[in-house]
Amino acid sequence: MKIGKETEVSTAISTSTADQIVVRGKDLCVDLIGKVDFTGYFYLLVTGQAPTPAASAVLNATLVAIAEHGLVPSVQASRMTYAAAPDALQGAVAAGILGCGSVILGASETAGILFHEIEQKAVREDCGLRDATIAILTEYRAQRKAIPGYGHPLHKERDPRVNALFEVARSAGASMKYVEIAEAVEDAIPDVVGKSLKLNVSAAIPAVLLGVGFPVQSLKGVPILARTAGLIGHLAEEVERPIGFALSYQASKELRYDGDMPASAN
Image 1: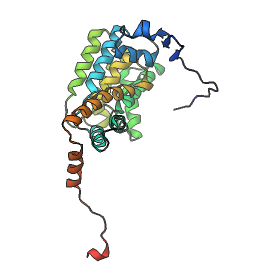
Image 2 (image 1 turned 45 degrees about the horizontal axis):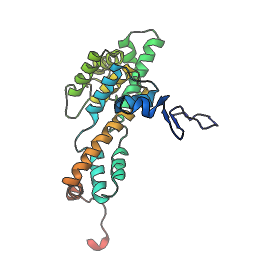
Image 3 (image 1 turned 60 degrees about the vertical axis):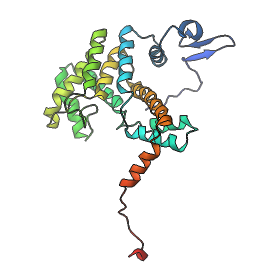
Image 4 (image 1 turned 90 degrees about the vertical axis):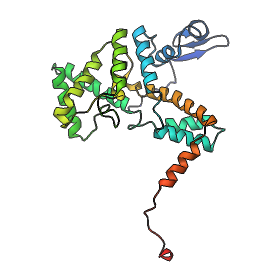
């Protein structure tokens, strides 16, 4: 990511005086508190624009879809951290969020980049969507890059959240352009990869969000925000039903040492 060359510090997000707080051109106390929900406020903070009804419906749906995902590694890290430092809720949440990368949660961003590349190629070369899709997927394969957002260890057919999100977008009147691209990728994968890989939620999220004007460079923020809520839920349960040390014990119980031993042990 290119770093800008600004020499003066400025922001268009917020400012304040002794008696007023301004956020994205709105008076926080007059125009926003009690007037907008958190999802709409999040969209405003990121884009600088108030969300359309379609954008609100889609963003709400994606946040609900990805907030909770069971005892995945990031959640285990968070609960074990909280068990060790119950006075530091923020540290436990951070431990879970720090585990959000290309494998966990980051695929929404990379899938969005893939869809954007296909869309740009189709426009630039004035070719059909399938031709652009095949060309980009072939480039990914040549570079040994994974195709993000397709395939799931449990949901061998489409992840059930995919159709649910697509239906929300369709019913809300959102643009379905990137949904069409996502489905074109799914259709083309067998020809390029040699096997079928179905859409999972990490591809559905950018497909619907890009259709309501959410910026591609901020896509990773949606699962991060959603998973923060999920982590806080897990930590609330950790207080009542602590399993952090049990998770650690299970890991050590299954551990097998296969390194060298000192000569004296023989």
